[in-house]
Length: 360
Image 1 (tube, rainbow, N blue to C red):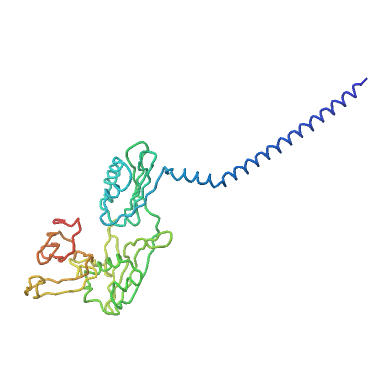
Image 2 (tube, rainbow, N blue to C red):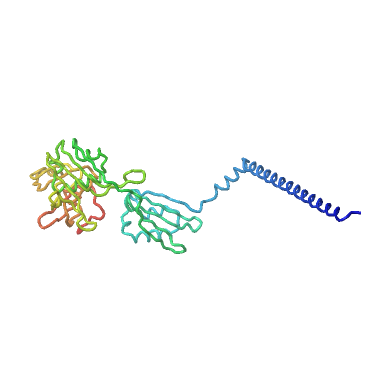
């Protein structure tokens, strides 16, 4: 018969055998599971490599429409807000909401060419506009975002991420002021402003001589790539004519109000500009000349400046428009009354700006 010691030994061995058995079963189960997973992965890879499955998936996904679509557009000549929004595949309610939203902002009243538009539309929700942006200038854009579950947009003006730099340029005038400045990389709008400031004291048709020179300091705005996207104010300028310096300095006399003064503190602005047209050439002066249409000599009591079609015209000074329509032999013309003494006439115009009317 077994004694108690033998029974205790048998129990210990039995526990040990069961432990080994459990461990062996666990190893077998884990190996089986790992092999099963491996087989499943290989099967899935082979299925995905199946050319017929590829074609089927491509065919299915090609018919699916993305929920959100993004549309970019740049305005062109002849565009209106109505024509732009009518080109989008959205319902009439959305179109009216778009027009109503932009009508609240004066900065968007006039639509020029080259303005950038951006739309984000939810195609799964009755093609509603979720957000849109309209460029208001080279440095700003108006951002509109739909308020959830409401038929209105919130709006805010966003300043683009530009850096302002102060730029200095100088050159000797060998051909013309305009060409010399363009060759330096100065933007046309800076040249126009330069000419406008000096137009009160310089006749650009007769006072500029070869080998005269100019210096200019002005603001430039650059994007992250270092490209000039816009220009700011002229800070300082000097025009050297026959060894005589004509200097002008920018001065802010009130908040957001600036004027330009010479080195003696005298404003450079006078009643009338000597050359009121950009890029003009003198075509005739005082005295009799042959009428271009009627063919006979007629006393001409003014000074004409001629220029290529499309050349911008600057008024000689502040005043009120007394006429803006056809002027007979003068063609399309605008008359400006500056004061009780002076009146200027801008004739032979190719067309008028929409906002220029009598009384403005």
